[in-house]
Image (cartoon, rainbow, N blue to C red; front, side, top):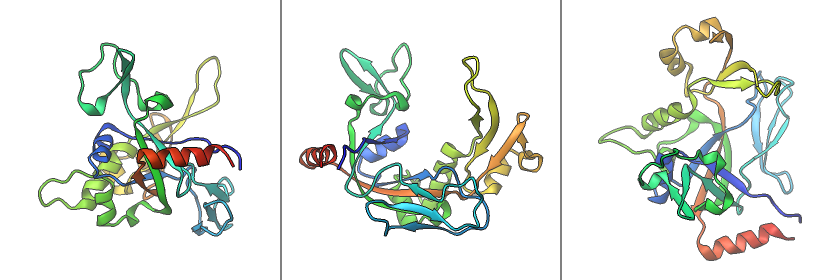
Length: 242
């Protein structure tokens, strides 16, 4: 067995706090690209050594017929990345409520491995449509509820805060720039998108470029548990050698 590369998950500040408080044991991440067309998408756990998503031939040709989960399989170590900065030879994390650095916080995507304090063990991977999430799973996602609030409604708001706003689709690098070819959104529902961006769906365009909307998208549903030091070291050892 060859060395398995590290798996990473990026967490927003609110979800870092939920995870460290013990309220977050699940996360849902987009399957990319999303399947398009009439094909049936299913999760195949019988492929030896791999857990993959497959699709029938009814899906459009651009969609990969087999996708392996980019966040690993049960038993693998996952490192969480969060917003941070370097200070006095160490690391300071935005989630801890420290004073903002003069030069600003460093986005989580740039966090080096040495700064990752969130260390998790992947315990389960599923594939499902976003709206299939149960109330119990919403709580496991770490949503912060107000009195009497419905967990699914709280999670809908959380998901849309992270995935509804149009994101640019970039073309190939040219003259040190990547042109914006279009925009994409992954809302909980098309109604949610229409409410925030009225008329965009009908026009099929946003800021003069094509607009792609994948409502109720297919997601990886990942369950994890904190990696205790002893377990962590054991897993890292297993990952690094046959």
